[in-house]
Amino acid sequence: MAIILVAIGSNRCHGRHGRPAGVVRAAIAALPNVVSVSPIIATAPLGPGTRRYANAVVALDWPGSLPALLAELKAMEKGFGRRRRRRWGDRVLDLDIIAAGDAVVTTRTLTVPHPELARRRFVLDPLLAVAPAWRHPVSGLTARQLRARLLRPKAAALPSSLPAMGP
Image (tube, rainbow, N blue to C red):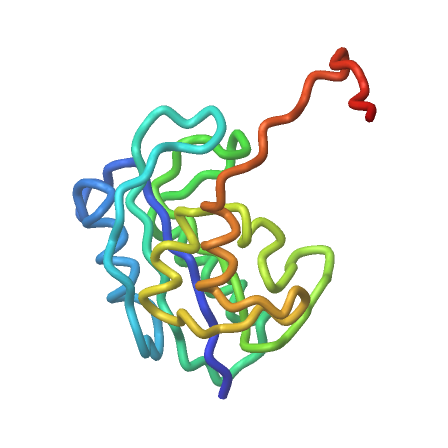
């Protein structure tokens, strides 16, 4: 069995589970073999979505293959009423495998670790509550270090019209 990290997000209400935070709680309850759960955080939408998200990360003790888990997660999204329409649009439930220990997987349908993991604070913040010492198998950085890099102030770009500095 391997510990799998799964990101959960919702920004649409559900008839039975209510607001997005309720959808996330219901999804957590429906997931198998949950070992650890982050707090649910509210975040701004990414892309064309208009509603705030509820996000969390869980650690699962998963006995099967990653493709089998992916199939189960996609079936769960569909069961919650997810319809795939516009990329990054509003959604009832989004479940993403973000990491599987030190595994690196790239197939047509699955990339682990998630390729956008290091650029998404809405994933890194809850990930820190579940697995702060998890180490990205490609970069070698821990979840804590990835978040620190993301939050580090960026140097302002200099305009190309500045004259060269000379002695």
